[in-house]
Length: 189
Length: 189
DNA sequence: TCTTAACCACGACAACTGTAGTACTATGAC
DNA sequence: GTCATAGTACTACAGTTGTCGTGGTTAAGA
Image (cartoon, rainbow over all chains, first blue to last red):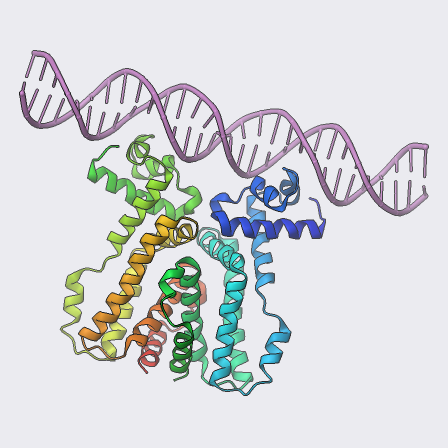
């Protein structure tokens, strides 16, 4: 198996775009090659089979979705009150808007996880860890609200982003700022 | 195009199972025929092409997910307080558990909606209508909470069900009763 | 009984897919 | 120069897929 990391990453990013644009159904070796603008057959030099490809894409999605440490640090210089939590939520939404392809690819992978235990296990670890990190972060940073605040906000944000990405016109008529504000306010209790 | 309604519905139900079990990728004419235990080629007598098939599946999913009027009426004989809202939420979760295939098929269709305007339009109408119905229902029935209660609960429930169906082990360690109770309580404010 | 139309089973076919294999190229060590 | 090696380009092939056509079956009315 070939190991030119730059090229491999380019192929994975192309795969993410293909997943977002054409779904799991369209994710073929040839589609990846075309998207990455490399000669046909290249992708099959990098991924032994479709399963390995899928797992590799998942790892890549995970890497791309990590928030930058600096932006978190910057936010933490602000006063630790409700409005900071609101800001964090808006940051998440902004990130989802800025990298739709990555989130859509993740959704495809989630459905794939329903039938593929290895992907499910990896995704479960990632997501469960993420939730616990958020709970700990909220507590350590002395942000308002308890464990349940973080968890219920997590689900609400998941639902909101899911809806915005798949059926934008359902959310469009709503006042997003008001919605986030109310959600945070009530989740804190 | 053939129009034996019973057979057509059986094929659509088979298609929903295929979608849930193998994803959009596995949804082929032959897979539907096999699942419905009809001779190969039958499905192609009923659906001119894959697009028409997809749209028909969506309509069928919609029909199957409607809650029964009697169960709603029965619940409405109870006192209109927070615990009734909690009960409604548990009903939704129960329905999702009982008909996983339908919800999973819906998720596949949602991703498909990302790229197919007709499906997106139809789904948007369904979902947006559903939210407005819930808001109106909550108000008319004098259930506690305002419009924002219903909307933020909708997103939280969407996220919760999405998580439970795709990554059950993320939610498993949580106390579901407590979670729903807190979510409702705080959403009402 | 004959007609007609709806319904169904089945096969054909071209297009596409995953996968494996092979040959070409560039680079650097010796 | 030559060799080894990793990376790359390209092709072959068998299996699967969407779609279309064709001919058989059924049932109901004339």
